[in-house]
Length: 318
Image 1 (cartoon, rainbow, N blue to C red):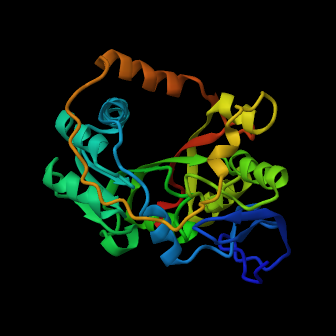
Image 2 (image 1 turned 90 degrees about the vertical axis):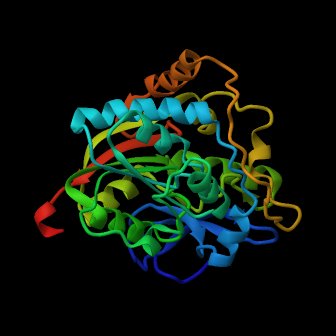
Image 3 (image 1 turned 45 degrees about the vertical axis):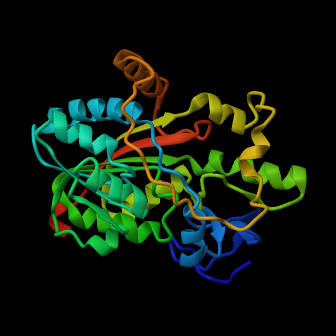
């Protein structure tokens, strides 16, 4: 186990080793839990080269119609606050969601994406010139620039989550909002631990999660950085109960954690514009609403994901 301080709270207190995990081909880390802030994470954090290798294999053929249904829900939410402003989607992928927001509202949309191919698609095919290739820090937006920031399934992947949220607060207006969707680390880490116990080898989280944020960790981060929680909901109840062992697991659950058996090969295929709709607008809208409906207020360990709305707590000290 590394002697490095906790990457979230900088504590040098003892860490609990939960199991061995893998990230890239033939890599091995400890899955550790900080005794101070309770974050669970790959210890040490993977290197930049390992991050690039892992995510180079990811495809970006997102379902256009699902993304556009999500956009319609966002437009309603945004317009309740104000009818125009600047909207940033961090990890915007191909840009389908923000493209729909731009088409159907008066909001200006911006996107940041680490992978080059989806950025090229967003800019050249969808015409989204405000989509930038790189990480959030490299873009260097102005202070107090955005009215609304969307961070969906991103925080668990970044190598420096605390600095990342601090940067989000810097570029957010004093009366702005952040919508954060993040896996519940207590539940999300169970699969890796169970895989290690059952198969006696280091499992690899197929989605590449490096940090596993428990409720206590998130509340610690929000307090330290200066965010108030406006709304918090727990999602993925059924799958969360499966992970926790309160419902029977799917027979193939372990496949999600099988470590990579050969070196990573980068995906080079060109992204194609999806024009054929397999189902009606109502179908996609219903599927999105179904996803939203089956949630519970608060942050609960038995759920798989958290959906949290934040606002700056002390704008005058920003």
